[in-house]
Figure 1 (cartoon, rainbow over the protein chains, first blue to last red):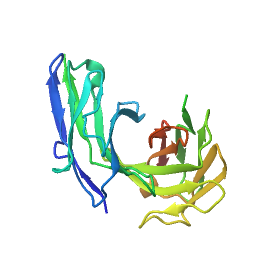
Figure 2: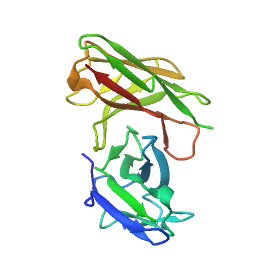
Figure 3: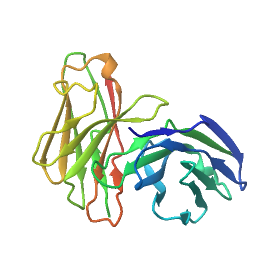
Length: 115
Length: 117
């Protein structure tokens, strides 16, 4: 079974600063996908960034980047130059590469960007 | 592209009645859709996987007779909460798996808030 753990229920960051959200996971799979989703107050789930486990290079998407450590089963999200619109719940998620393609979500981190 | 809609966005019903929630992929065909449930300030919990033309696969602990799922076309899956009770009040979110993408991405609907009185 796959489990995803987010150990930070809440975090805050000053506008324009950088913040890192933690995520660890447990799996016996060798190949898989990892995602960070954002859920703003509207409740719409928005994909922030994704990482394929067989790729060693960390994914980046504008101000968002990840630190993927496969051996440690760690997948943290770094948000640079934080903006007020980044205020949201952030969920880390795992998906197998083959077979059932449902997502396993972590418990989420509520991020507040302070003006 | 890759838009998923849900209808209704919110619904209030009396205890004992049934409620149907629709999930549509607007600009792509989705052979697989997923239904999640989210309690306040909690994560998304997978309820079932909906496959077009076949029976849904339910997660352990989810009552299939209570949460009826029908995926009759490549663009529509429905979740019917039968004989709803206050404990069924929750936020229900669907997602659709887009087979045309080069990676496995699910696209999420905006969710449906169900309140059972």
